[in-house]
Image (cartoon, rainbow, N blue to C red):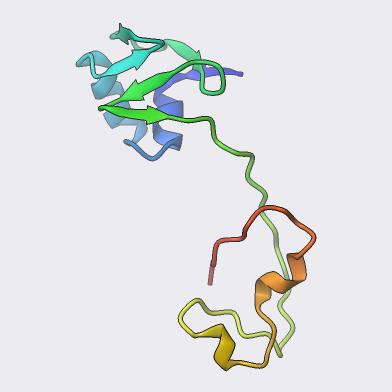
Length: 105
C-alpha cells in the first residue's frame, strides 16, 4: 500500500514526521536508489527499497494489540526473574500466538 514517505520514515522510528520532511528536502532519502527531494512522494514500504539518513527501512509486521484484565494471581512486571516465581507469566495466556509479546507494564 502506498503511503507518504514522511509517514513511513516516522513509523520506522528514524525520525518524526516533521524531521522526516527535512530529511526528504535535504536529499537524505532514497527510494529504489533514486534520491527523493519532493514532499508528498508516495512509496510502498513492502515493495520499494527505502533508505533514510543511511538506514534501510523494512516492511513493518502487522501489530496486534491485546487488552487483558489480569487475574490477581498474575504478576505483570518485566523487572523480576521469572524462574524465581511460581506464578505464571502474563504471556502464558497467549501461547497459541506465534508472535512474541513485548513486556508492557
